[in-house]
Image 1 (cartoon, one colour):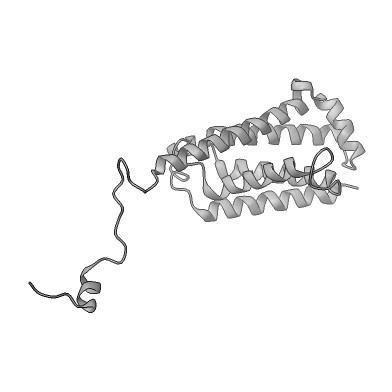
Image 2 (cartoon, helix red, strand yellow):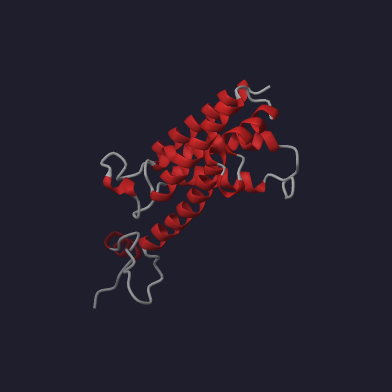
Length: 190
């Protein structure tokens, strides 16, 4: 029986051995990640869509366009009703886009842009409720994370040729667009 020297073993043994997946395997199934991303997308997306429907339609105890427009005006934004429509549409469309995984980087960026403005309005109340910003901050970071990671396998994006294989660059570009748009809107605020 020939002996193995360290140099012979290193040359013939691969540096990383693939882990076989199966029952009892320590490897995580890729479907676990996809299921987790689906759950996150549904929770965050439907939450944002519900918030947008409060602004647009007055559903779920919301103020509708007029009530939300008054809030925007009091918060220093010009054309309060127009801002209410823009914010409502952004939240509904961005939220539904996240929920179903459609144009996920852009849907995430839409939520990031809207929530950066929400954070600017409530900033200074501390981190914790009742006047805190933890809810808005969590929604902002969650949307940015989904834009960066992509939607996972259980998403409409898997059927779109350009977005089938999510790239980090798509997410980074989308988040930057969301932040830039938020910045422009904040410049309009008094």
